[in-house]
Image 1 (cartoon, rainbow, N blue to C red):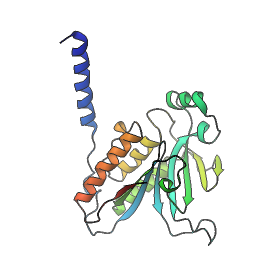
Image 2: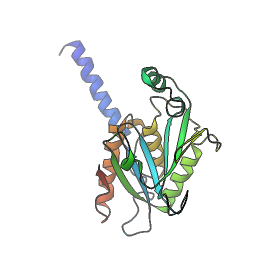
Image 3: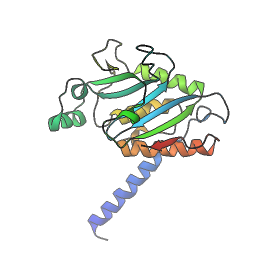
Image 4: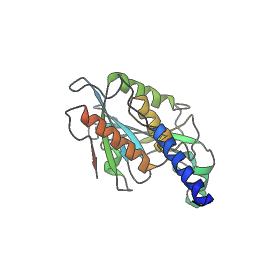
Amino acid sequence: MQPTSYVIAIATVLSALLLLSACASPVEGLWPPAPNSPARTVVVSLDTWHAMIAFSTDMPYASPLTPHAFEEWGYAERAWYVEGKTGLTGVLRALFWPSEGVVEVGRYDRVWADRTPQPPSDLFSFRLTEDGYQRLRRHLHATLLSENAVASFGQSVFYPANRSYHLFHTCHQYAALALREAGLPLSPFLTFNRTSLAWQLRQATGIAMEQSSYGPLSHIH
C-alpha cells in the first residue's frame, strides 16, 4: 500500500469510528412513549433547505375563518431571511462566518412540508411523552434571546436567537438539538445537512414503529 493510500485508509477508518461513536440512542424513560399510553405529537418538516418543528393546536390565531392548526418553530440567519442579503456572498457569510440568528415562530393551517415552495419535502410525526413534550417546549423558548420581535412576514414572527448561525449551527442542528431534548435518538454532531437529519429521523421512525402499534410515522410528499 502506498503511503498516501495508507493515510487515506486510516483517515477513513477513524472517520467511520467517529461517526459511529456519535450515533445517539433514545433517552431511556423519556422516548418513545409506551404503546397506548398518553402522548403528545410533534411534526418535523424538511424541504430542500429548511427544517421546521410543529405542534398541533386548536386555538385560532387570526379569525374564525382561519383557525391555524399548527404552531411552527424554525431557525435561520437574520441577514438572509430577514434582511434579504442573499446570493453567493450571503451563502459564504452564513456558512463560514458566525452571524446573528433568528427564531421563526409561525401559525399556519398546514405544516411547512405541505406548503414549501422548495420541494421535495419530508414529513415526520412523533409521539412524545408529556415530559418529553414539555422539555422540547422549554428548550425552544430558551433559544430566544428576547421576546421582542425583529420582523414579521405573513403569519411568521422572527425573534433574535441566543446562538449565532454558522456551518455547525444551522436550522438542521437547531432541530436536532431540540428533538434530542424530547428524548429522540438524534446527534446534532451528525446533523450537518438535510440528508443527515432525514436519515436520523428515519432511524427514529423505525424505532418508534418497532415499539408501538401506531403504524408508519413518516411520509414523503
